[in-house]
Length: 439
Image (tube, rainbow, N blue to C red; front, top):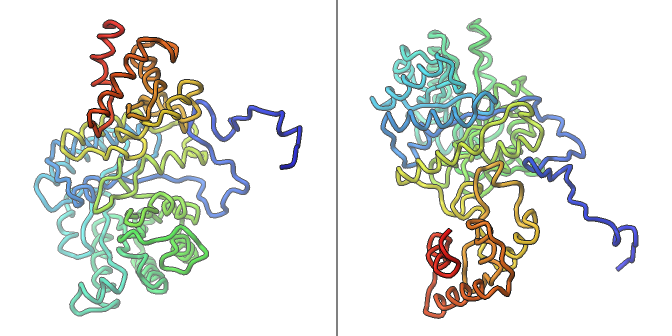
């Protein structure tokens, strides 16, 4: 090893320009991606894909979630729209209530989701929405096996008929290109060009210019531009941008089947996409939709929303509400899972005691409103006990304190007796009161 005195004797350097004490980690660009839009945002689909993924909502529950979305985004512009189903009476009541809130000044615009079919457009004719999503399946997996007659041209003709009706009604269409990451790129471009050409022929108001949502329906997209389309998410958006589509007309809707959902979202934005569609806390079909709170954490790190931020602390209430509904977030779900900031390793607990930044990615209590926690196992040692005493009783005894050693003996006895689960503060508190006295 080279003995470089200048490096060896330096420090500590916490690289606070990237890991500021009071904020989320920042991106320190070597070169800002050329295609990254100057403005980006997200849109919410819990009322649509969250329900479709197994969380049916009564109108009152839908209203509470809409309010939670508004309470999270506030006036930051981080979440701009929320889409609703319209096929059930309860969904239409939920949409009507959300539209009332929007018209009264709420920050999240309600839109609808329908199939790209004329009969579905009729459903939203009088609902008062300015924009609707329209399912436009684009891969041959769909167009050759969902439609009769089968094929690309019949499918496109049906979609265009529905789009024209939207324009006639003064509603902006948002074409959801289902299964785009398994569709030939030339087919995606051919259909987008057909829609744009039809829009030009109609002479419709510029406010009705169509949007396109690229859907990674099966979660098999890749965040790389050095693989071919259609799996390359960046290449799909580069092709659409080359057609003259602006970033604000492009949206990405991924799923997490192969674990790359956030990476794919960031790749889409870096390639010129303006909006990410997903759900707060990752609700949705199968493995879930894009978790908007995680995407937004990265966008803040990139420098977006510098003046007005979404309120990450507010999501604790939404997580609690989902638990009430029986759809709580998994224990190890990032940021908001019960164990997301909980360690069971003695060496980690010891590090938290000595310098808690060592085992925290950022100021979790301040930015998320969640405690750093320790659960005790047979391997947690006295460091875990001391951390819990500091966290919950504001006392900091020495490792050799007889009371700490008594607690450690009690913990070890649990596991020597065959216990297989960790011990949390709520269970340990009674023993602490016995040994230390009640607080």
